Length: 250
Image (tube, rainbow, N blue to C red):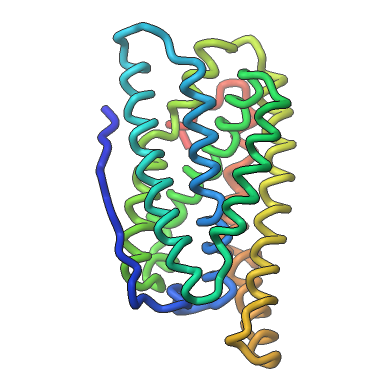
């Protein structure tokens, strides 16, 4: 059973660089945070379109999924608003992503929107497992960001199967759409996150050029070097393409 844990966060007086070991990684997580409110609202709409008047375990899981995602969206919206006090324009990026996603949604079928959700939920679950299982990341977060990341990660893992199970219930014979959408969504997602992270880092006026060079080199190594955060997440991608894949066996 999926439990909805109603968590609220107060970021007042919290540090701008809440990931103590890397300012680039702070901005990487800022970029992710800007995507969560509009992205998780998109996921909820995509899954909700496939609800059925049943009283089975999957429908109950859908209710839990919707509740959890709604609270994640609200928590990151609060974080994004506070980031503006540090001159980090997360709410502006959030608004842009929301507009873009609604435009994309208007061009896609309900099945395609669900397939996008399945693909991106695979990434959020992978990120959650990397955060919780590889303690070298979590130890560098300051509060309340650490608690936010732990809570969000654990719930992404808890509901990682929901969108996939809905897709398999309704479209189990359409393997091609699932994998083709994963390829397209992956390219768009990583390009967007890279651009947003770069934009936030480059426009940060609280670092000198010399400091930016050092932080960029160190941060890139921690993100995409051997055993980097993104490197480890991408290791979970190939299993998605197996015909007998299921999120709960990741």
